Image (cartoon, rainbow, N blue to C red):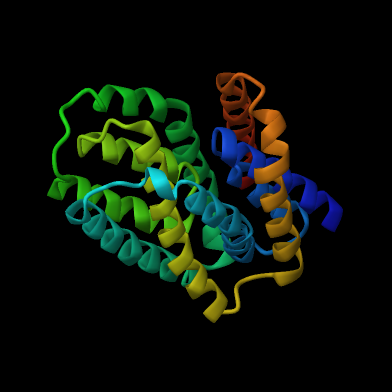
Length: 246
């Protein structure tokens, strides 16, 4: 079973490096392995976080956002991630499983249509981040601390609303904010003893290896084909969890 989790996390890490959506694989794999729902969600955050941190380091030269933009976004992300993690710790396994199909649906819809929305919103002129965009980022951070699927594309949309147009800078900032959101949520999970360490450590290793090794192979494929595969997997799993909840 640990080998299965390692392979799934490797695929998830590769998908995250190319198109995103690694959590669509990691969370169901942990549930299949018999991990309790809330613990599986918390462990997924732990498993995917090291690879995100590595990506943030790799993107460091692309993050040239002004301090008056980065600081408010960072504060909103930390506050929202902390609150979202706390909400998860106060959710029962039964309640989480009832919410999971809807969380998966929201994440899948965001992943499916978020790219087109981001491109549409990105047509405006660049300007300082607005209060509306900050409130959206706060809401996304709460969602990210609680669940997080599709969070990256949601943040790209907010950056487009804020007037950002450089995709490399946007991706770097997205990864940095995701590390902050998941990092503070992860601290909550550790303090509450919600992490299942044996599968979590195996999946963390798998996610890192996937990000560095398997992604090198995946990048040779057209990105849209990889993205289409993630969308198909996400919709299949969403339908499965709705059927399971009946």
